Length: 152
View 1 (cartoon, rainbow, N blue to C red):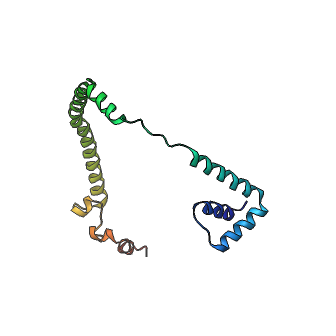
View 2 (cartoon, rainbow, N blue to C red; view 1 turned 135 degrees about the horizontal axis):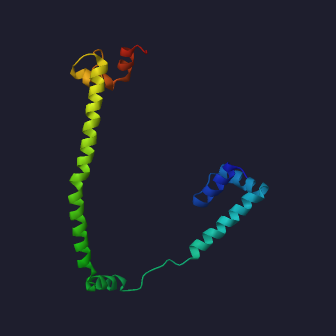
View 3 (cartoon, rainbow, N blue to C red; view 1 turned 60 degrees about the vertical axis):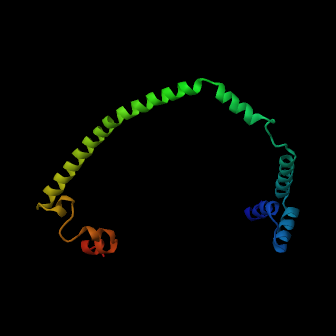
């Protein structure tokens, strides 16, 4: 069974084929038993889906659900629990960011120190790890950056 024949078979079930495609599919169905089996399986499957009843709710379903929701006292207990969880989260938030801020500050100081010690000069471009030939606006154009480094 060729993939192109199988694609034609699937398309024939969803839409109409051109006369040339239909004749190619008919010839493939005559010569390939596996393709015929697949076609019959798809036709049976399509029939089963069409015969199946769609599920539906009984009349008054929405009204019954809304009445039950209104009568349950659990809605008040849920909001209290949610408020406590929200309060706990807001109390923990500054502590989480404090740890991240300390780690980020240490990493920035280490990177700044490394850049300044390896560059041999104290300047703004050296602190960001840039040499004097390369400016921040040149970083946006890769061609200029590579030409500056002598790679092109």
